Image 1 (tube, rainbow, N blue to C red):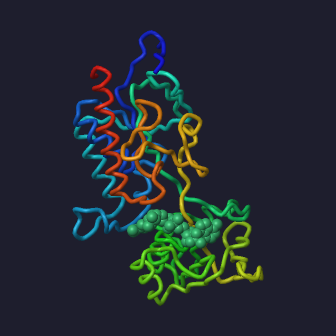
Image 2 (image 1 turned 90 degrees about the vertical axis):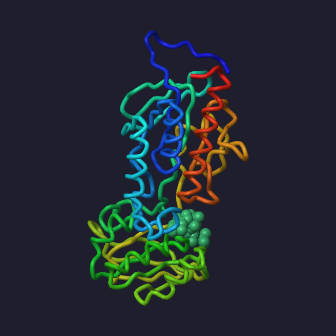
Image 3 (image 1 turned 180 degrees about the vertical axis):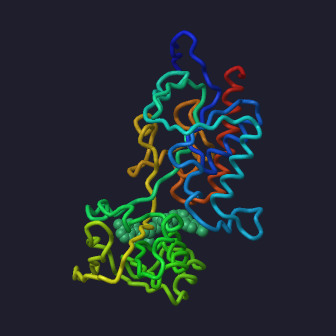
Length: 320
Ligand code: NDP
């Protein structure tokens, strides 16, 4: 790779990790313990998606489960113990055509680094309706854990048929009088156990072949106009006062897609069986490169792989 000429006095990091979910923090843990002094740019949602979930029952080591935010806080404390630097900042633009790489951040910093781990994860998707955008934060949400509390004793709707939708619908029954689960086809995509929990919950009413045509209300959600996906027939529901979206995620890869191969949605494509990319010294981990498994534990595992690949790469370049 071409060498970049640096401005006088420029500090060059061994490794910068973008993202602070399980992938980023595991990469930080391993590189910190390898004495590489990692810098983590935490992004605008430190801790990532687990900070907006409740019970995590499938992360090994917690027999009785653990709350998502607590798990991330623990990981953060663990990486800090080994000297990881964590900064509330994110990459908005980068130059990966020569080494060291250059990262431009939202705080206006320019960072030089020998290696880069991209672990920026994915964010919740919205339907894209103007009424939905207008009422975001006023009854429209993509985070049941954050906003469920505001819907005590009222009827609300959840859109989606995956594990997220079932989990959120179940969680929201703690607050809402009825949770309407709007599924656009005739079955759920969720795992069997999550389906069972949702379908057996007496406070959840599943509406098959149903999608949202419009969110009603000017200043807050006052109802929904829903559409039958088979016939196109529309009905107004004035009983629903909140709308939660749980329709999947969009990878946070915007600053990087110009440099790295990616699929049509923006998931970065790494080398099979490793965290390497086609740019030597740039590695990917977690949901940014995984649209299949998308679990905290697989993200953590790939963060570990990235850290080991970083160490080997620096070693092959003559150490650090
Ligand atoms: P998924 O991609 O699995 O599911 C998205 C759901 O939203 C699908 O039912 C899809 O419908 C529906 N959908 C997508 N776009 C629209 C739209 N425009 N209008 C209406 N419905 C739409 O996403 P999830 O976030 O549920 O799950 C992602 C991953 O995370 C999965 O691997 C899941 O297993 C995992 N997960 C695990 C949890 C756990 O184990 N505790 C909890 C949450 C997530 P269709 O089926 O028709 O495409």
